[in-house]
Length: 407
Image 1: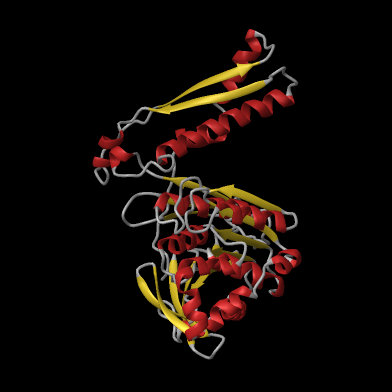
Image 2: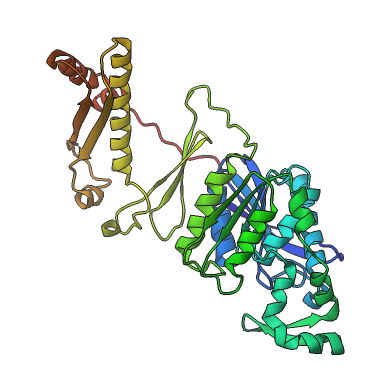
């Protein structure tokens, strides 16, 4: 997947720095990601979530708010209202360059910002919040001991996440006057609230308030023991997988036209990271799978191995073929399932990659038939298993044509 460095103009005329995570293939929809208070577009959670959504054909724009990360401007001159305006401008840039965002994702205060912005953005069909406060004023708890100084002196330097930031009076006045009630009531999009009950920065009660304040369709999913910043990779990937699966119900995903020579479409396999073996599998732009290798082979065991996927195809085809024949002949087959095993030693097979010489692969099938079937009927269904198209493909001569794609 490609990541493009782009920029656009923010609310006060300064240049905002952004990254556009693009799918390997066609872009089926676009999303906009808003980061947490004083964070940046490059925090691990933002990068991982954008990458996983891109693997599903959803391009994701993530940017630094004014005065943060690599964007121009002074953070001290910004507030919640200016963040919302930056979001609207980011959405406009995305609409002009790729397509209008259908999905908005906001982390922490960014979650409050996407809720505030969503009702005024045409085309938004789904909104996701991650560890978001139900009231923007919640962020003042991060510097509560300096509130009076800020009110009296006009500003104060506070430490947030180990870094100094200047907070001015206009900021605390802005968040005090910013409510989400009206935006939630006007939210003409599905809402997904992701929150960890162990979030010590933004309590779980905020998720309850957001959920109760929104109209249907709405969903809530717990992030279990994740921290507020979603720093663990497995938590970020879980959130991304949930968002991707949930959003497809609401997004208007562009269909991918299959090649004339391949009516079932293209199966695109893309590595998740160069550090491991995990692969994202996008089948004809409609179905998502994951492949990996066992830990013993240096993988992370996050999905079936390539041989297990082959076995799955054989097993699925076997059961489908048996069901089709049983239905056609009105046989009393109540249920069928197929166990498939592949007995090749994984490590030996990989070590011989690139070497010439024939070898035999053995897939073993065990077919389970339930129902009031006679011995003859059971034998008939057993024999029909060998006529499964995938079975015949695996036992026939196979031609695999390979070429390098054009850059």
